[in-house]
Amino acid sequence: MAEITENINLLPYNTFKISARARYFTSVPDLASARQVFQSDVFNKNRTLILGGGSNLLLTGDFDGLVVKNELKGIRIQEETEDRITLAVASGENWHELVMYGVERNWGGIENLSLIPGTVGAAPMQNIGAYGVEIRDVVDQVEVVDLATGDIRNFDNAACKFGYRESVFKRDLKDKVFISSITLTLTKKDHLLKTNYGAVMEVLRDRKVQKVTVRAVSDAIIDIRQKKLPDPLLIGNAGSFFKNPSIDPREFIALRNRFSSIPSFAGEDGLIKIPAAWLIEQCGWKGKTLENIGVHRHQALVLVNYGGGDGKKIQQLAMDIQSSVKEKFNIHLQPEVNII
Ligand code: EPU
Image (tube, rainbow, N blue to C red):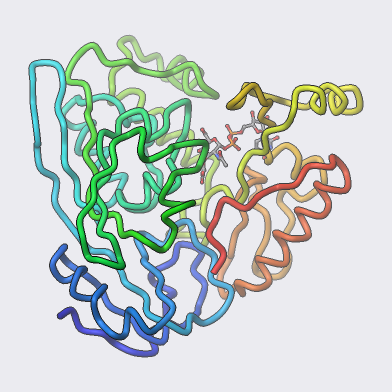
């Protein structure tokens, strides 16, 4: 069985760069060793935390249990036709490397999800999305290990119950399954390139791109993200800290009467989505620094750790932001990041 070590600092394993210790720690390089760990006493008698890239996580203290680092690797072609290709990808693969693998071969579908930190297994968990594309648009199947029985189960796209930063894995099946691999279908030609969201078109225009290709879209998105979002290798962060809230159209009209510049997008189920970054910025938080933590200068939705930051203090900052948004707009911001 994979070796279990004790008292490990998790700083290298979370992009917020929080120093917190795990009582037990193990990494699993393949499905067989993962299943062995799930059947072990240490796993079944302790709190457990399965870790991918640690990029959507805020540790607020030491973890008195077992951390399992997912290192399952492999990309396999499952099916290929003239127009499409279906890949089976192990959950421990790095998401952005998978995107680059597709972009290099001119396979379309996930180029808008370039440079999102984290692993392939974590991607369906919160239905990662950016610039008008979500992973649910390409997923065929998600394969999981049932942690109680060790059985392998497959979920088709509908069974994943994807929503905005939501899935069945984050809700009903939370802590009950381990995502072991996903299959997704990409286009080999006639790509449905999405360039009408945010600044994508602008960047393509500025770059004088003549022919919009999978690679051109990916390059533009990498450019936008690098300008706006802090690189976790340089400044600790976990991307958007909160979800964009959705509100009832009537509530929205009332808000717009008070704040005429309020931006909005069509949300799910007839609701109106408001950018949390705007709400946070209006409350004066953008660029605010409190010792070694703060709110990013270029994107108010991203909380940052400039080095040596404490997870509890970041959590407190998040709660203070929630209170001021609630007070000014009567909107409750829900964290997107897993707070442990
Ligand atoms: N805005 C502000 N102030 C800011 C930043 C943005 O007012 O500091 C307003 C602007 O009106 C802007 C709008 O917010 O038009 C939207 O901003 P942006 O396009 O940067 O996107 P977002 O809604 O803040 C979401 C995702 C990001 C994803 C981008 C791009 C969520 C919680 N976040 O952010 O995902 O990259 O769209 O599609 O849905 C993540 O989940 O970790 C993440 C980074």
